[in-house]
Image (cartoon, rainbow, N blue to C red; front, side, top):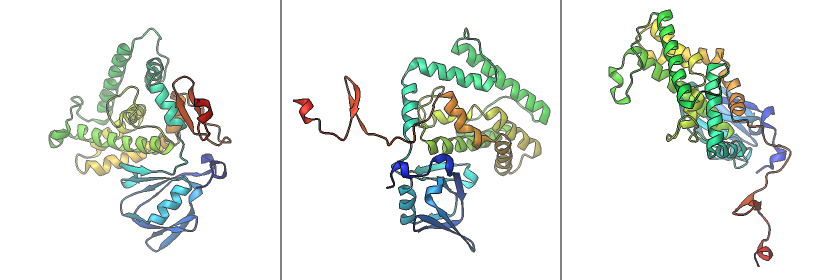
Length: 304
């Protein structure tokens, strides 16, 4: 395992690479990707995240080399519109996870973040006199107005959001399209959050679900991505909705520069300033009086 200081900074790496329908093998400290008649050799230390789409196979040696170089590996659906699982090297960033957990466990901090998230959606200052219940009410009005406006602009009949997973075939086209588009957005958000170390389950607005934080973050971008994508898709056709919604989502994600914005936006909302990359991380031991003490040392004399 390379020492943290010896590894390239994340800002100097390719953010992510996506491959599908290929075979991946170890090539010294690189990986060799065989796709059709092409062969690509990519140094593992230059990749932050490798996304493996449908039809990929990867050798044990390649995974080990990627892990030794702290490269995140994610198994995703076509074009990253599904997120299945991931693996990462032992030197992966944990500072964001600890920062998120500390905020999540503090009710006052949690309330401040919830207000910042709602303010992000409104793109304007919210009066400090508004209660959380009042803000949720204003958000409901904003979303209903958005649905009504898009319905008028696209000529799509809108009778309200009405969807149950067990009644999928009974849902009307626009409700199906919204569910498909939101699932695409959730997958992109989940991949990005997971890649930098945030926990998908520690939500601030949503709670009690494995993807609570994913839902928090996806809601920040629905109004400019998944919702208009769904209405545009249904305006074009009622058939093959899955394919056309995915295509519309790709367009909206690209236009919104979603992947470039997502993590900086989350860091700002959570006021994460970043870790000092020049300092080698130290493992601490939890202490009931001092909060934490340094690990990796002999404490036998102190306990006598």
